[in-house]
Image (cartoon, rainbow over all chains, first blue to last red; front, side, top):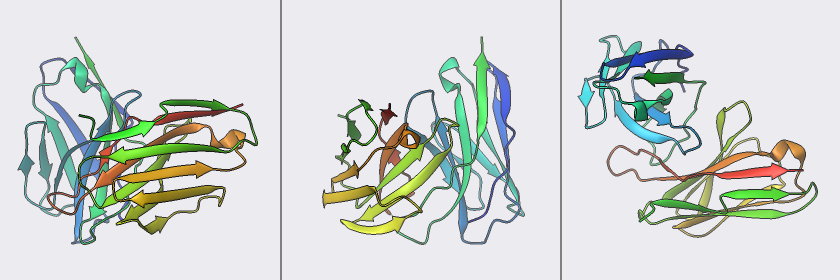
Length: 112
Length: 113
């Protein structure tokens, strides 16, 4: 599975958009980009995933570059409850199961 | 209703003891996982079961033995506990239907003294 690179930390003001970058330059054609987050002392939580098109759900938007070597997770209106570690993971969806390879992630702190 | 539940939430025990952590999911998923998060906060997969069959077994000491009595349960038994086993253990489940996203339990914090 391809590796990902994320900044170790970033701050965001409450109510503003948070843009979280992720590099995955060795991603294969059949690998998806998944985002999870882990709020302190809780289990990881799925946010969104995509292959090559931009995706949006009730939590976030995912923008994947045309060459698929990088992506950005956008939290449109960050709240204090969005403070968490955010993980960008590339994952092959061809299997009915699969192991998520978590990196160090990005610690996002949303401030009032 | 809790989707993925684990018991106990906290477990404190002495070195050399044997302990079990239980996991149950009510999502109807076929696949369940165990992850370990150490003190440096890195999450690593340990095992995965699909329809009660072991499909992923990372480099984990054989003191760790997962058991899946049915699709909804995946328990983790640990023999001869060591100090280095202290960590938070997360159970998860997933289904190929939809996005194959994994749903995680709240975690079990194991402390070995």
